[in-house]
Image (cartoon, rainbow, N blue to C red; front, side, top):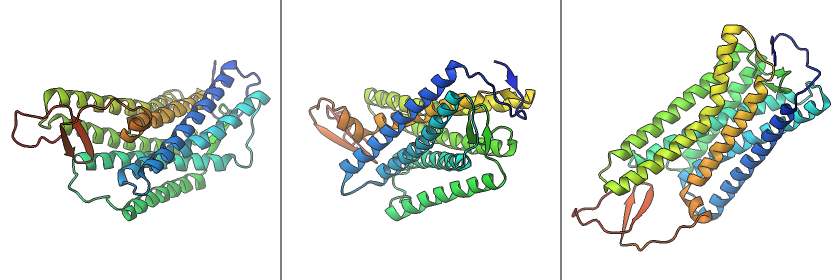
Amino acid sequence: MSLINLTNNDTANIYPLWYFLNDSLMIIGNIIGISVAILFIFTIIRLDHPSYSISNLIVCNTSLAIGLSSIIMLINACYALKSDFNGTGYIDSSCILRGAFLNIFYIYMYASLCLKAFNRCRCIVYYTNPILTSYRCLTIIILLQLLLAVCITLIIVLTNGIDYDVGSHLCLITIKKSYQFIFTMTIYYISILFISSVYLYILYYVSHLPLLERCRRKRQLALLRRILILLIMLIIPGLFSTFLIIHWFFFGSIPSYSFKIRSLLDTIGYTGSIITIFISHTKIRDQYYPRKKLPVNKLVLKKCELIVLKEPLRSQNKLVYI
């Protein structure tokens, strides 16, 4: 496929078959993401009722943000599929509105992921710190997240940052709007850097705890595996966008189908993230993947988690914290 200049608004008359496949995969992926997010939230509400922990509410907030983003992306995917079948696209009355909501939920989602990482660090490393331990504090932080997302999106809309993309039939921040596009990518880079730094610090902290070697190695590997999977899912959408920025910088144009592919990668990343959060949550695993119970000789309570040891520790005369 040939490259087109972004200033050219002519729409190709022939739409390759993979366009329909791309749109269909987006629809299926977003439906899965929405379903997992809803299942996660309702399961936590049912298991925690009537007393809800702050940590679980923060994870539910992250799941809600991912679910809302997936809903907007599902609507966009349906519109793109319809346009591909018709062979042409156009700016409908709600196109800019959908783009605005997508950007709001995009910022809200990454802010929620940062909050989740921060809370995880607080529970494991700084467990004696009373930060973020009340419902009122959590409510204020979530409202501030939404307010920040709305204000940033309002600035982008007022500066005509959201535009109709001919190749994807969607209204979003295209690379033609270079300042707005780089600004949103900067938000993404800062979020990924913060999340990666926090989780790597948690891994470093856990690796230096005085544990039994076998138990420590098992927990380190499990923690590392979950961190890597979540980070990979979050990095997938950003890698392609970075490639588009580099291509635009050197060649002044990008392939006409670029944002269609990016939307699919966004779907894969967000759906993979919510699935990773779902299967990594202890209560969810115990609810849907029950394990065979081991004889309990000793319970060791550490910070925010309860770990069951099969045999008591006889090499030390004091409690061992994990």
